[in-house]
Length: 550
Image (cartoon, rainbow, N blue to C red; front, top):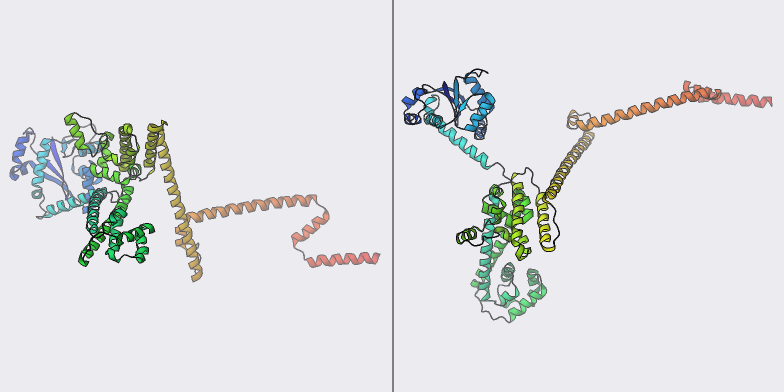
């Protein structure tokens, strides 16, 4: 039985024919030893056919299909063209060796070609890979390496850039930087307080906020220059006139030492740096909120942006977090306490990073563990919806948050919460209604855009003296649906008018038959179109005859 080998290279598909392998008995060790020698291996394995890829994009598509275990149309045509034909009811005299069992099963399902994969086939294909450039005589030195390098780069780039808007690496880096900035801003603010307190120690008790203290220290600089005239400026900085007066009064009776101008300049610059860091921290928080709303909107609406970002960063990615069960998510961040409890056979921790959620703080001491378990369950559901849903929506997160609120009321007041299946049904219905509203809005926007375009085209044609947009073939092509509907309406109106006219004619004929002779004469005159002047003349003659008779 002949054995064919399918080899997928970076430059194309290759089909090899292996001879004289039945006598060997498919000894893997013998093949492994003879692979390195091209003279021995070349006598056993020979090139049967080769199909090069058309372009780098074609190579990437073929590589993606093979990695997913699928057979493309190009590969099917290549195999059917170069392999013996498969006849139904007859025993096949060949078999095909492949590397991946998934690809082999798909080839067998579609083409009924028998495929094999095992250690023996792998060793033969390893020899093919080793001596592939020797089998293809038209290849130049370095061509195969370039093709492999380009395909590897494009394949990796396509895998990394599958969805730019939902990359959770930015969230991980942002939350790490946010935690670092919190520590740095706190330490720098304490350094500003300690440094400036040598000059103005009473300011620490008056201004407690770190950012506001740095702002006031930058504004004051030298306390000896403070007077009642500087109260309006201090009021703008502090936001309270009474506090500004208190600062001025404390500066007049301060116990601090005087500083040289150079020292005051350094304090001023350092306070400015602390203020800049605080401003950057606020902007970074806004950036984190926007990214969380794009990547994990349901998780953010349920537990908050910061806690959700910490969970994602600790798990490694949103996909890893979605794979975690609720019990793992509950103690995520408390691994040391967990392993210490397991080692000492103590009590395991009840919560990890989700302790920073407001729900855990609002629960009573005896219900914190229950609340943490329930919240971890809902966070697991929200993360899976965010990871695997096609469209981003916050409906499920809001419904899950309502469930957590109801659970809190149940623990505190005993109010029975709704069932999960009812809440999920409501969430699905609301999500579908939102989708339909969005679709209708898009349709209205498109229709209004077409109308505006028509009006503009008609106005431009009227100004330039050109025919209207309806006579213009481009305008007809742009708005065929609207014109068809208008023409149908016009036809219906014309048909109604015709029916009304026919009914009126029938009524008029009946009236003529039942009416007097005078009316018939008048109607006949009107129908024949006689002049009004002749009718007036006859009337005058009749009147004159009547007068003569009298």
